[in-house]
Image (tube, rainbow, N blue to C red):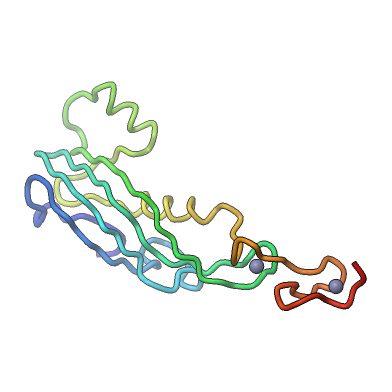
Length: 157
Ligand SMILES: [Zn+2]
Ligand SMILES: [Zn+2]
């Protein structure tokens, strides 16, 4: 079963802790940029057909530094929240309608909850900020292109 999914048949009622490792490719993330499995550490609360999920996604992204262009490994830890209800049950409360708008609310078919798209989005959002290999990266010299992290170049200041 590809992607990040919760199997409702094996999920006990009430609260439980689940750890799932997912191949980045199954989240539609390129393996070249996501070298290791994505770990989801989830607190799941199952009440009838309603499932709430809160936890963390941990992954490693290989990014190009925006200043020196070097590739570096960037550990990603992102909070993950989702609510799922069985599709086609009852009328949605105001709060649920709000959650749907915020894209936290999902619907499941009674067999599994598919968190794939949400997990992918959360991870991509986390790396969308201009990444730097380190806080004080000196970048490249605009004249000769030398990596200034490796020392000053021969250009006059
Ligand atoms: Zn850099
Ligand atoms: Zn230079």
